[in-house]
Every structure is written in C-alpha cells, then in structure tokens.
Amino acid sequence: MDNKITALNSLHKKYGAKLVSFAGYEMPIQYSKGIIEEHKSTRENAGIFDVSHMGQLFIKGASSLAEDLEKIFPVELKSCKLNQSKYSFLMNDEAGIHDDLIITKVVDGFNIVLNAACKHSDFKLLKELLGDKYEMNLSEELSLIAIQGPKAVKILEKIIYGVSELKFMNGNSFNYLDESIYITRSGYTGEDGFEISMKNKHAELFTEKLINEGANLIGLGARDTLRLEAGLCLYGHDMDINKSPIEASLKWAISKNRIISGGFIGFEKIKSQIENGISKVRVGIKPEGRIIARENTVIFSEDNKNIGKITSGTFGPSIQVPIAMGYIENSFSKIDTKIFLEVRGKKYPASVSNLPFYKKSYVKGVNK
Amino acid sequence: MSEVKFSKEHEWIKLDGDTATIGITQHATEMLGDIVFVELPEIGSSVAKDGNAGVVESTKAASDIYTPVSGEIIENNQSIVDDPAKVNSDPENEAWFFKLKITNKSEMDSLMNKEEYEKFSKESGN
Image 1 (tube, chains in turn yellow, brown):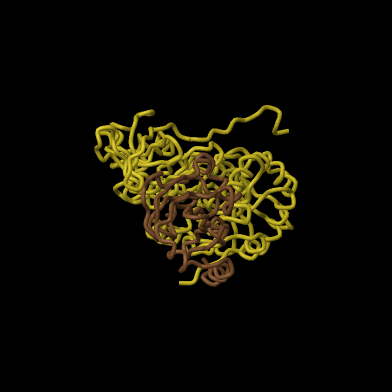
Image 2 (cartoon, helix red, strand yellow; image 1 turned 60 degrees about the vertical axis):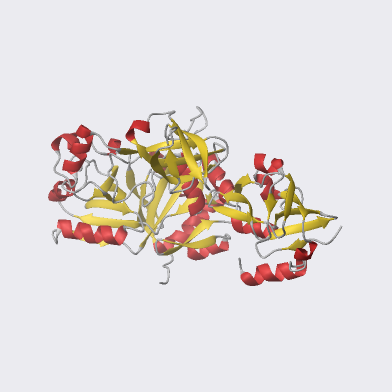
C-alpha cells in the first residue's frame, strides 16, 4: 500500500529527514542532527512537529450536540466554554480505549483531534453513534503543525500576533494571510506549546517562517522520547482496546461529575473498576544503570514472579537515564517498589517510579 | 599492522599480530542513530565468527553486534559503555568495541577491504 504524504513532505526532505512509514503516512523519524539533538532543542528552544497525519474531525451542531457527545465521552461538554479543549477517550462498553483524543468547543460545534492510525475507524464509529443528525467532516484539507518548547510562544507570537494570550488547553481563531486559522495552546511533549491548524497550501511557507525564527524540525523519534519523559501515553502501546482509562492511570481525565452521573459508553465498567479495584495498572519504571527495557519486556517481582509487561521504553535524553512505562500487578505498583526487567535473557533491577520523569522547572523572569 | 577489513554486518577489524581490534563502522552508526547503550562481550569469553558479541542500542532500537572472526576476548572498551555517545563521534578509532586473540587468521580472507565495503554499503542501501 502506498503511503500518503502530508503537505510538508518536500520540506521534510529538504531538511534531511529520514522518512518512515507511520500509520499510513510517510513521516520523518528524524532529521540530519539526530534524535538526541532534536529532543534537547525542543526542551531548550523550540521544536516544530508535523502532526498533519492526525485526524481533524469537525462535528457541526446546535446545543443537542454537546448532550449527544456526552453520551459517548466521559467529559463535561455541555458546560464546556467556547475554545476550551479537553483530553478524552473513545471507549467501548468494556471501557477499552478505541482512541485518545482532544476535543475542543468551537463556534459551530466541536472539533476532535484523533490519532492517525485510528482516525478512520473513529470516524465510522462516531458516525454510527451519532447517526445523520450532525454534519461530520474528517478534514483532508488541513495540516496540523505543533510548535513546542520554552521559546515556542515568542517565536509563534512574531508570526501570529496574540497567541501569547492563549491559556493552556484553550484555542482561538487567528488571521493568517487573510484566512482564519485555528490555534490551541497544547501539545504532547511536557513543554509549553501550540498546535496550529491551517490549510495545506499555507503549511510549508508557515513552517519555513517558524524555522527562520529559530525553531527546529523534530521527527517522530524525538517526539517519542519527549512524550515518554513527560509520562504521556502513546496509543497502541501504553493504551489500547484491552485497557481502560482506570488501568491506564488516566482517571484524572474523566470529569468527577461524570463519574457520579454516568451516561457515557463504558461507564458501568469504569464505575466497577473504581469501586472494586483493578488487577493491573500503568506505572513509570526506572531501570538501574543504563539498560533499556523496550516494549514487551517482561517485569518480574523480587521473588521472580511474572508481574507485568513494559509498553514503552527508551533512553531519556534530558534526564540522561533509561525510562519506561508498563502495566504491573496492582500490588506492586507503589512508588519505589523494587522489580526486575528481563532483557536479552538477563534480569536487571529497576524500580516503580513517579510520572512524569521530566518535570519542567519554570525559571522566573525567563519568559519575558 | 595489516589493513582494516570490513564485514557485511558493518564491523571493522584491524589485525596486529594475533590481536584483532573490532568496532562498528561510521556507516553503521549513521544507520543506527544516537547510541545510548553498549554491552560488550566479557574478557576471557570465546566468540565464533559471525556470532553474537555484544549489543548497541540507539534511541530507536537494539541491534546485535557480531564478530567477523573467531577468538578469545582479551580486552573490551569500557569507555564506550560509560559514554555510548563516543561510538557516534569516533566509531572507527577511539570507540573500538573489543580486542580478541584470533584463532584462525584465514577467516580474514572472506572480509572486504575498504573499497569493497564502501561499494557494498552503498549498494545494499543499508
């Protein structure tokens, strides 16, 4: 099957990208400087991410739309303010996660950003759930570009006046080349940043402007190390259809009122898991020394019992130690519990760790 | 000292008497990306031609290291274990992986010289 390309494909090539197949798209895994440099430049400066492969779904509708979406998603949408974004999931009846997503209230409805690999099945499922009541459009005309890092705000403000006023997890429309573009203050790196939705035809020149202002292009490789340091889940790895938000340690994303009132898909299971507990839970894991425990590494207890599996593991360039996340039997999930990871037939000591691994330390006076 | 030879698994080998010094090529490091972990064979262990002799991990994935000739490990380079980034910066000199006492010098014959290796790595595209 041929891969699709994004509007930034030739720009990726121009800047020396190594391109790989990812979720049906030809995407940059890294550029010429490599993953560690890209990672650090995002933490210290600003990184640009082409996330145009992700789905941008627009659902138009009046007040009944929020009510109908609340029957699907475990967040409060009726009371959602204009331009406010919320992190949520699309679940099945067993609270297994079809996808994780960001839903934003816009003037004429909601827009939902979906994972690339799931977007078409999500669309189909949502269409089935909502029927023909609302106009739904999974855009092919829009690019999505993220800029992340401590200097993201300064750089973007130079091109789009007023973005610095946006609050975290809020968006707004801005003017760019006499057209309306939509920007949210959000991201997936543990850094301050923005996600910019604009027509494909403007994406390349806009990205060049960001580069000219000092931001660097960042590939999927550093995107993965950044999000893992920030303790964030990657769909298909740290969460999937066989895991619930409770097991994925994402209860914080289910609004408190909805846990009481229910009425969304998967509620019964969520409620029962909260009341009766769960057997496995997602935790952060820090190996001792330099050993890297990749996905599917088996986790053992001190008395040599198989107690779980790693779902993501890498080396954290900003913290200079290996890091991982995985699912572990609940009784071993306490912070600092000593565990062992089997890598290439040998067992290496590790411990259960707090998440995130990397925490932003804001320095006063820097963000002038 | 003999000329440097190369294997299809992207290792280089330099023979000095009975002692062979082995590392991975510049081309290999470019394919692997940033190296963040190195595991080397233990001193005193025996390794067989094309057999496993260590592991490198990049930010992306783990890759096995193979030995292009058989022998007994007499030295390994702890400095690349402590600072794996050295492998990216100087793979064909300072960041050698291990030294072994070669058991059969004729195993060198099947390896490539520099020119052949450059052609091989270009053509194979890997």
